[in-house]
Length: 225
Length: 225
Image 1: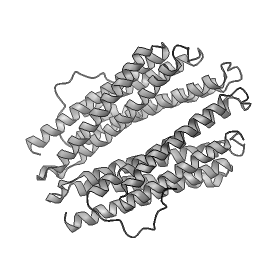
Image 2: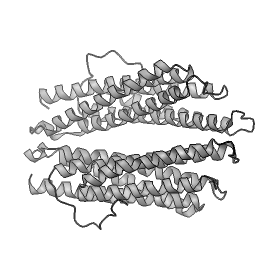
Image 3: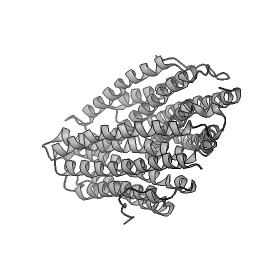
Image 4: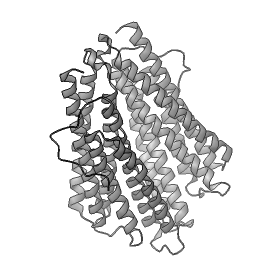
């Protein structure tokens, strides 16, 4: 591959890592806004969603420019297609964080999470944010092993969702239908966010196979915990 | 553009239309399986999901082959990227239809939809399937106008979801938390399926701009009703 293609692809991947970290931060803040009924923080998340969407559009356009190069280096478009797929997932992740923030804002200042489901939803939100942070690290290091571990860890999210339903459907649930439906949908958003983060990390495989070294100019991401 | 590129792109689009029609059919059958507690039909939908996933993988691979062509014709990859985005949406649509089918199978033979929400969920499922059928037509005809109308029609789906929540949260809801959560999630799956169908149709714009004529060898799709 020629130096220009290398450099363009490296820039795309650096922005992919930045977007993934932004999505992680958005979900962290959305969950805090929800759990602490913090409307100003919810507004920050909603605004960040526009920023993430703009980064998505910009990155996608640059992928198309790279693919349109007429030199033979464009002959292996697999890594660029991996970036395209990943930014599609990231756009959805931003939207899911925005959903959580909108619920937090809509329900403010009423408490919206019943005590019984608070720990399970908090754990789901933590995993969702952490998965995105770990996906950023996997992409940055072209680290297929971490990506595989993330897919394994996704089972915990699914187990938490089943646990959540167990609480909501128990005979002693006393918070009524609306709180239950809200909690079920919030759980669904966390679960989907985590699924998308796993899918982003899985693209590390294609970035590793293109032979591009680890991206520079980025802080080190956290490893899987 | 050279004849080979034209032909390859045309084949990709023909398969995109077929996949979109398959997704529509899957959602129609999933909704019937759910509303009529038809477990064998639910099993058919679940099996079709594997078929749609295989078509997704095959189409994506062929997109990469087309992008890897080293002739100058690969210089406008926009239409191919549109196909890539569209098949990503279609994979999700297949999964959403599968979710509905899995609920139908899991709850069988117990009735699972309360009479109060049956009409609104039936209408949502009808719109979801119809949107996919209309998206297939829009892609086949490179019809940006229909794609735009579809985005407008999506408002009805959102209104139906609000109406559904109004029923579930009303003081006279007598079917308990589990039925309410199920109905809310089913409504969410229909809504997301419809959103993805709108996104598939929106790709007609990029296929129109690449100057490729209407795909042949396909039956005519229904127009927007």
